[in-house]
Length: 359
Ligand code: SAH
Ligand code: SF4
Image (cartoon, rainbow, N blue to C red; front, side, top):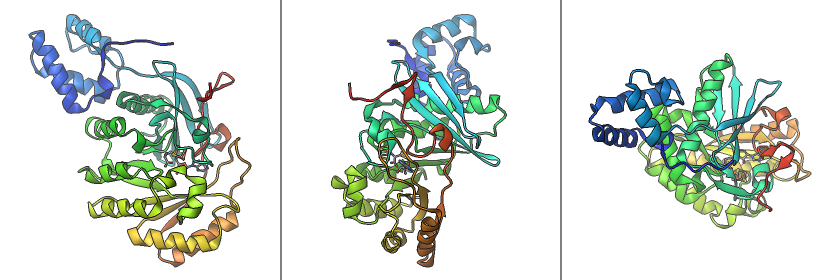
C-alpha cells in the first residue's frame, strides 16, 4: 500500500519545531498561541493518534489540523510473544516497508529495542539483518512511532512502563544520523526519556561517533566490536576496512574526552571464531584504555551461516580473563530466541515472503 501524504508528520518534529509549526498554523487562523502548547502536550503526553480526540479544541480547529498535519503511526502487521515474555512487533510503514522492534522485560523494567533503518547496508557476516540487505532509511517520525506504539501496547498488555531504549534493532543508527539524531531529541525532550536511558549501538561509524560526542546530552554509546584486532574484525565487520580499529579507538577517546557516559563494547561470541582466551587479553587492553564495559553476547544462530554460539564454559572463561584484567564484563542472556527476536536475528519474513533487496 503506497500512500502519498502531503501533510507534515508531527511525530517527526522536535518540540521546538512542533511549536514553531503549530504557532504559525494557529496564527494564520487567528487562534491564540497557547493552542500550539495544547496540541504538543496531546502529542507527547497522551499518545493519541487522531485529532478527533483533541476535545479541548473547537471542532473546526481539529479539522484544520487534520488537513495540515498527520500523526503517522505504523500499522501493526504482526505481534509475536516469546515464552520468556519478549514481544516482537512487525510494523508496516506508509509505503509498505516493514521493520521490527522488540520489547524485553527484565523484572520491573522494560527495554525497547528500536530499528533505525529498514534492513542494513553494513553486511556483518554473523547478522541476519545484514544478510537481508538495505531497503531504506527510516525518518525520525517512523523511529519515534515505534516508541509510541510500543508504549501503548505495553500499557494495554499489563506490562511495566518502558524504562530504556536501545537502538539495537534493524539497521545501523549512525548511518542514518539525520533521522536518528532528530529522534533522540524528540524522545528526550518531547517524551521525557532520560538521555542516559537511551543507548545508540554502532558497528563503528566514526563520523557518527564524533557527532555523538559533540551533543550536549549524555546518550549512551555501545560499540559492536566482536574482535580486538583489525585482522579478525575484517572477517566479521566489513566496515572495519573503512574505519579500522585504531581510528575507531581514537573516536572513542574523543567521545570520552567530551564527557560521554561509559562506553559499552558488544562482543558476539562465535565458537572457534573469536572466543580464544588470548583474544580476551587483547580485548581487555582496548577496554581498559577507554574504560569500556564489555557485554558478551552468545551468538544467535541465523539461517545464512553454520556458525554456533561459543559454549557456556568458553564464554565464562573469556569473561573471567577480562575481569582478572580489571575490566567489567557481563554475559548477556539471549532473549526472544524462539520468535527470532534476539540480537542480530531480525530480518523481515512476512506472509511467507522473505523480503530482501535481491529483486
Ligand atoms: N547496527 C548496530 C545496531 C543493531 S545490531 C550495531 O551493529 O551495533 C545490535 C547488536 O546485535 C550488535 O551488537 C550486533 O553485533 C549484534 N548481533 C548481530 N547479529 C548477531 C547474532 N547473530 N548473534 C548475536 N548478536 C548479534
Ligand atoms: Fe547492520 Fe548491526 Fe547487523 Fe552489522 S550487526 S549488519 S551494522 S544491524
